[in-house]
Length: 172
Image 1 (cartoon, rainbow, N blue to C red):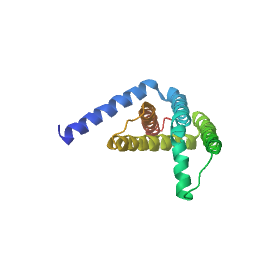
Image 2: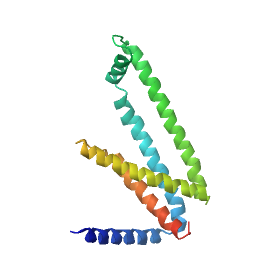
Image 3: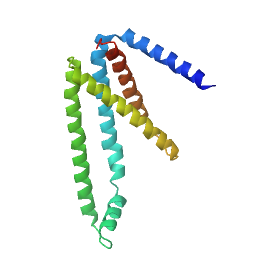
C-alpha cells in the first residue's frame, strides 16, 4: 500500500466518524462529551492510585533514594511504610482534587460555556496525543501496555474528534 492509499483510508474513516457524530447529534454530545471525559478521568485516577503509585513506591525505591542521598544510612521498615503511606495519600488527594476541578469545568461545558468546551477539546486532544506517545514508547521498550491506557487514549481521542467536529460547524 502506498501513502496515497493510507490517506484515502484515513479520509474514509473520518467521514464515517463524522456521520456517527451527526447521528448522535449536538444536543446529546453536549452532555455525552463531558460525561465520557469525566468517567475516563475517574478510570485514570483509579488506575494511578491502585496500580502505578504502589508500584512506584516500593521499598526498593525508598532504599535507593536514601542511598543516593546519604550513602550508608538506612530506614527502619516502619519508617518506610510511614513515608510510603504519606506519599500515596498525598498523591491520591492531589488526583482527586484534580477530578473535582475537572467536574466543575465539565459542568460548565455542558451548560454551554465556550471556555469549558475549549478546555475539554484541548485536554482530550493533548491526552490522546500523549497517550499515543506513551504507547509507542512502551512498545519500543518491549513492555506491555495496560488496557486502561489504551482505553483512555481511544476515549479521549473520540471526545476530542467530537468536539472538533461540532465546534468547527459552530453547532456546539
